[in-house]
Image 1 (cartoon, rainbow, N blue to C red):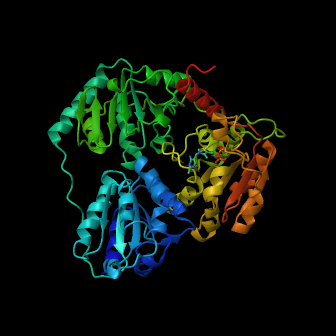
Image 2: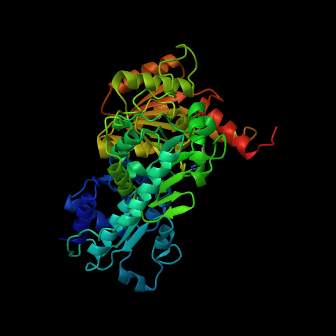
Image 3: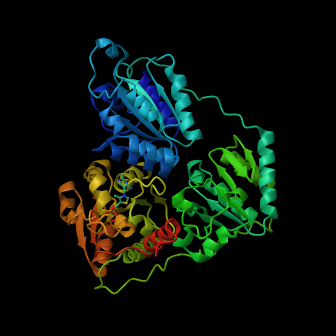
Length: 548
Ligand code: TPP
């Protein structure tokens, strides 16, 4: 078999179910070989950032690897931002890039797409990948492929494989697995014992979970752990939607001052705060009402555990959770699901404003909640902007969003990637500014077999930025008629200005399958969600405590 075929089999063995790609001449042999092999379907999109976000969402939504394939230089460098997002938010995204053949470097000519040197691309990608390899020798390729792909899963991060254009059809041996990493069982046992004893000693233990528990596929086990420990649990902003399918309802999402006050108090006053797989970032913790003293918290993150002044290195989170479960046998006394009650900070799902009122972000959340209550939850792919704060007011449902790295342009391609990888119809939430970046990928929905419902928060403005700095005028984006563009891209558009129009358009959009549905929701100037208002006020108060 050839190198491409073996590579695709290795990707498939690690959970990949498709490849998103845009070819170029350096990648044509790779794409030709991928198409011929038929191991994984190849889906083309329009712009590389869209590819990256679609492949990222595929990995986040179904587990296993997400895969994007591009050409050298112009293609691969367009992928830097999605790769950076995947690095920051711990997504096992594989980038396959074509490249010049080894002998082409000897021509004495600069090659097209070359930046500074032929390995500029390699060096740029080094910064945003957890491992990488150049497959320029078919004899060493199987071991390199195994190492790099396994690292993507073990370290939950993006990786890069560079494939010179004379390599894709070369004969190649099958790809095995890289040697398993050996966990020091004594260290693991000591760590699990110390962690449990700290939790037992705490008077107000609390568990805050983050994205790693999804990346490592341990949500069920963490739900069981919470039940056996019998301690309250919430998600971080980034972890919104976690544990949804486990029957273990979290108490909500910790948003500091921007969120539920009772939950904020519980988290911040805990003397045994277990941060399980949570990114300790400003989006998760910057708006705390009082500064959390992380020295007294227990942080399980990126393969290490920090407790007070102890640091246990090389402790994989999945093994740690297993070790804790082993020490906490289920007993009738503590096996009752402690988190069964309705979470206290659920939004008021049914409160819709009067039908003739102008739409607001809060009304969008209510209308979407009503729709999901009536027809069942839909997975949400969300962009950055007020749509993300509005998503926090939705009833518990799966949420994909770049909540920490906060890149715009994620929502629409992520919705496509989510539906391709899982078959589930998504709800996409996006602002007009972000839609202007990658919304055009919707034109590919039909060929991908996707029919997302897209709710476009059209305020003719970069409104979130305006909220931070209202005195500036550069936030204006002008009025774009997105609803009427939908038909030209193979979808159905709705122009929505009142609550009544919103409810009607959502009902029609939900009822129609087979093409994308775009609700162009016209928001009046200054109409922002209550959560964004609180978030901005809290950030301003904390960053400028002396200001007015
Ligand atoms: N460019 C990228 C790729 N990502 C970013 N986060 C930004 C710029 C900075 N930024 C953050 S929010 C925002 C900008 C430009 C405005 C978002 O506008 P829109 O999508 O219309 O949503 P709204 O704020 O109006 O809700």
